[in-house]
Image (tube, rainbow, N blue to C red):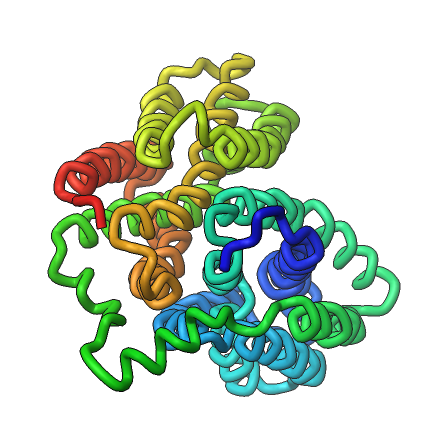
Length: 399
């Protein structure tokens, strides 16, 4: 039964664990690879390849994790994911061989698929009912500060203790805070989930996430998510060099980059708490349109112009809204049954594409000789995402 009031303890705990999980498993990596390269002699390419393998690995765990959450095992999945993350971080701290490092990060993909946004969204959706939209908004608002908190914190830890002991501290965050909060704050599966499972096993299967595979609207939504996911992962890695190549100073480039975070948070806030002003479908259209406008405007912004902040605001707002749209629109389009499994089916190809995006953008830059081809590609992907999303809405029927 859906709560009539927001269960703040539950939502706050899950939101806080998202901040820690992303901070320790995603953002800290960028700071640790430098001292690893110096000590062990492994190249940045080799180190980042392991990280990309984790994203690919997480893609293959996405569907089974989603199905487990749909069956009421959200507490076990997220608690186990945090325990696994802590163990792997501790093993990483002692690694001396590259093969072991790669295997650790392949395993880290399983941890990511169990503790990042998608499982968190599925757990919230299974317990919040009509309050899901606000719960997910709160989670993404808090999780959006993961880089703000953990990039400086990880830097201070490395400066004080070195990268190996810093990893042990990050492991302690996962076992001592995330695993504990997941274990005590995630409620047992709602009665309707347990009963529904029993009923389905005895008779006709009402639960069949594969039903969406025959819907063209589902595939258009997947295409939209892949294209936007590649933009949101590939562009941040190259954005500072793009600005510098276009004649902006390093100070202006950093200022514009800094604008993206607040724009994401502001867009998520307005999206999550403005349900009376705009439907989720309307928000989705606005999300795709803002992305097109951002990459359409960037080539025409002269060097040194403050309008570069406008690009950052458009791009950041689109990214922020996209997180909400990908979390909340699928149940409206394809039904609320099997939320976790369907989200996993969407996430699987998206994560594989996201893992390839930074390398693909870099290769395109090296082949073309500048970032013009990358910007044209991003504009083309944004336009195609907009078209695919409109086709998705046109073909989707009320579940």
